[in-house]
Structures are given as C-alpha cells and as structure tokens.
Length: 354
Image (cartoon, rainbow, N blue to C red; front, side, top):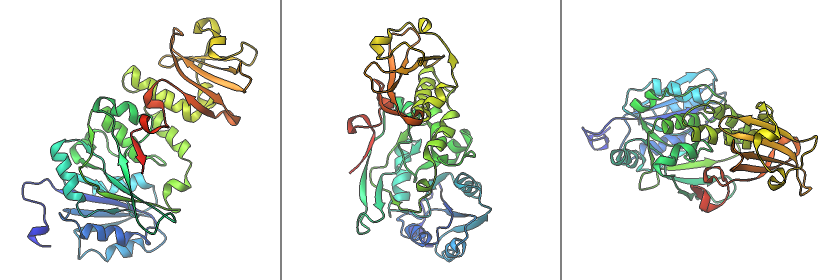
C-alpha cells in the first residue's frame, strides 16, 4: 500500500466494518469499492455471520489488496456481526458497509471531512440500486435531516438515515454500542446517539450505493414486529415530549394491542365531548389513560364508518391522534397535528425518492 493511499498523519484512523451472511454474490463488489477509495481505510473487517455459501473464502481473496481481517461467526444476527467487527478494530472511527452495497470512491475522505466540519453521527448521501427496475443504473436519494433540536423526536417515529454511517468509537462506546435485537439494530443505536445529543449531519457529496434486491434481510422479516421491539425500549426515556412521541409511534404500529395494555378510565375522567370527537357513547366504547399520552378512546364512529381511535390530552383540550381502526385492530389513515408523526407527504418528511 503506497504512502499516497494512506490517510494523512494527523487524520484519525478509520475502520470499515462489513457484516455478511450468504453474501457471496455481492462481497467482491463491496470489497472492490474499498480498493478504489481515494483515501484507503486503516482497517477492514468482514464478519461472516454463519453463511452456508462461500462468502468467507471470497472475502479472504482480498487480503493482499486491503488491510483486511475476515472473521467467521456462528449465526447470531446482524447486530452481533457489527458488534464483533467493531470489537476486532482499534481505529478511532467506524464506517459501515453492508456486504451487498458499495462505497463510492470518495466515501472515506468525504465522511471524515464531514466529521471534521461537524463532529457527531455522519449519515451517508446515497444512491439506490433497485433490482429489476433499471439497467444497473442507481438513482439518487434526496436526503433531508430534521433540525438538530428535533432529530431525536423524529428518530423516535422512524429511522430516517441509512446504512453507511460514520461515527467515532468514543461516541459508540458512550451510548453502549450495538444491542441484541432481531432487526433494526442501527435504528436502536441511532436513537441512543440522538438521545445523547450527538448531532446528525451529512457529507457534501454522495458516498454510498444501497442495493435493494429480493435477498435483502429487510424483505424477509416482519418489520412491524421489529419496530415495536426497538420502540418499546424508549417508551419511558427522555422528556415528556419524547415519551409521548415514542408511545404515539408505538400506537401507530401496534394498534389496539397497545391500547389494551393501558389502564382503564371513564368518559368523565377524559373530559371530552364524544360527539365532537366523532364517537358514540355505547357499550363498545373503551376509555384508557396513560400519563404521557393522556386518554385513548376507541369506539363506534358517528360517521358510520366503523371503529375510530382518538387520543386526547389529559384535560381533553388537545387531540393528539385520530385514526380509523381496521380489521385486526390495525390503525389506518392516521390524522395528527404533530409533524413528526406524519409519515406521508414530501413537505412533512425528511427524505424522499427521486
């Protein structure tokens, strides 16, 4: 490796971590994208998470071209593979790469420069490659971030940044690192970054190509269930606003199942005008209460369109969420005045496909 390829003497060291499970069809392309970096990483670690193909041997072929370590592991999930990879490094910075994705040539340089401008969590600017949609020509993703003061509350609603982040080992260890979960281990980590007040920012140029295909882990799991697993960890954390946002986001996903976990209350306690809320007072009406949410009412709709759920503040003065209840207790057509909970509409979200 030539001196020209190495990071400058005073530049912090960077380790690229790659979790891989049955990634033989993609791992060569991922590692090739590291060879072509304008600034070579100091360490590259691939953790083979119990593959039953030849991912491990394919990755090993790159040891003479990269400062590479390939580790075999029993299949314990992506969170454990990422954790294992980080534990096997000593660099000051961690840069993520998934085995089926690639880094653009200026990624290492661009991400470290972005950190120098604004220390914190550096999210990637991405291109998206969709299987069967184009002739292998990626399309750009327009990345938008909430203001620093709003980053945690928006992150409680959904993960708005992608794989391919760069962060310091110091911050990673301070928030507790990767934790066991079925999926969405990154979201769990980013939530703790944001809760700790670590700002999220972007590089000036694109750094990452995300490959969307039929073998993606995300296409073969119950994302709703994994979202609930992560969100439940944050229901009682942070300020009242944060707790309420987490619980409303949880309610949007869990539907009536979450309502039934709450304490029972009465209409009189809720101090509401049921007709104004579009609800009928009959034997089907449920009233529940929760410290941060206020009162949650579920009952027959005066419009005759089935069941409706309404969340109001403790004094009944503010409607926080209303939704039709579909079959199986799922909430549909959520209505809210809280921007962080509005999932649709380009003017109300912070990222979008172009």
